[in-house]
Picture (cartoon, rainbow, N blue to C red):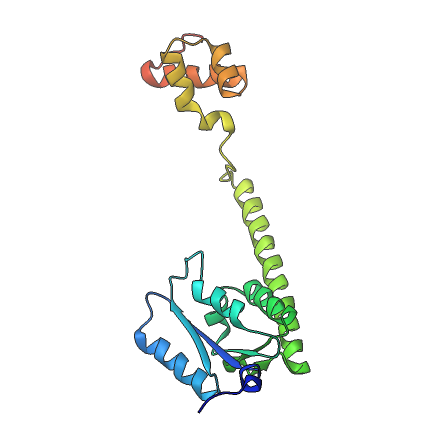
Length: 205
């Protein structure tokens, strides 16, 4: 049966499914089955590692959907990698006039309740981030109190090999400091420690 122009421009239910490279094939098939059962007439799917930096089919889907369409996914983690990622995608969809439906959560942003649930998720994401930062600060404070926290390696210390190499090439301490952009005292300390390690004596670099 041929479609009229009006039918072509009607809103669509568009489904997106994703599995990781470690998931079983049945996982993808189950998603596609549920999306079809939900009424999706256009499907996008891909198999990607969770560490993948790009999601080609997701980008294709976001470019495909139009105002009035509804994007359907089975679970939030099939669409996004994190709560903040989910909210960013939902915001992009909203700007394009596309609603989002998440089957497992019974969320539909076409309804006030669905929009409220996404707002709550946004609050949870901010709360989780605050908790993470608080734990990080507490962990650092505890490590410092126990004398176990070293922090970032000092710039000069990170250049120890370069200091010793340039010294072996005949450069003076001042020349090494200027070349590497570190303090003169740091250069002499590194060289002095190198000598102490090699023969147990300091020769006063």
